[in-house]
Amino acid sequence: RDKIKQTAARLVATRREQLAAAETELKRRHQAVATCRDQQAAAQQKLFAEAQAGVEAHELVIHRTHLSDIRRIEQELMAQVEEQRAVVATAKDELDRAITALIEASREVQVIEKHREGWQEKTRREEQLREQKAGDEIGAITHRQKHEE
Image (tube, rainbow, N blue to C red; front, side, top):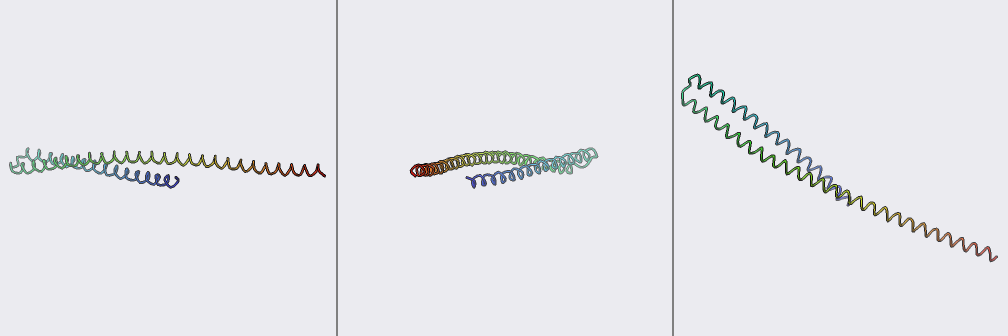
């Protein structure tokens, strides 16, 4: 049971590491979305500035295509963020299950320990009773021998 408890403790540690890694990746993906949005805002500003400056139409089409690509990339990054959120949620669930298993293993160890302590106490009492009985018998024999003399 103690090995089961140790295994459960190692599993909890592993699950905590996995959760931390998943949360770190989620933060990284959020940062990628923020960076993409910044690029999108800069590209849109550039498009507006060039449109007001009277740039040729084919240049504006190129900028609009670039802006469209950035928006598509943003959507892909948002989808990756959602996927990572699911990974984080799964990691949290697995950590919770591992903690529950550790708690259960700890309880089982405690129950067995209490049972063992009770058994040891019972054995000790039985040994004391045997010793006391042997002492009483020796005392009775000694007493009889003194009265017979």
